[in-house]
Image (cartoon, rainbow, N blue to C red):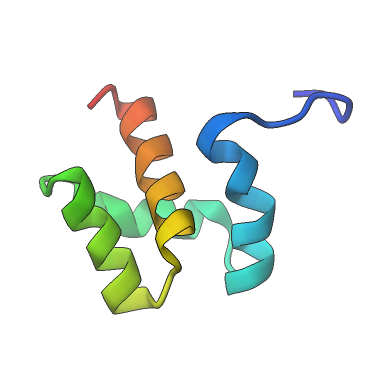
Length: 71
C-alpha cells in the first residue's frame, strides 16, 4: 500500500488501535490465534474482557484476521 492509499475495511482501524493500546497489530493477531477455534463474537468478547479493547476495535481485529484466514 502506498502512502496515498487509504486502508479500507477493518484495517482502517489499525493506526487508531496501535495508538490507543500501544501495541502493534501483530500482537493482537497473535493473541487471536490463541482463540481461533472460537466464534467471531466470542473472539471479540475475549479481546474486550481480557484485554480491555473497545468493541469497534476488537471487532475490526477479529474481522481482519478471519478474512486473512478465510474463515
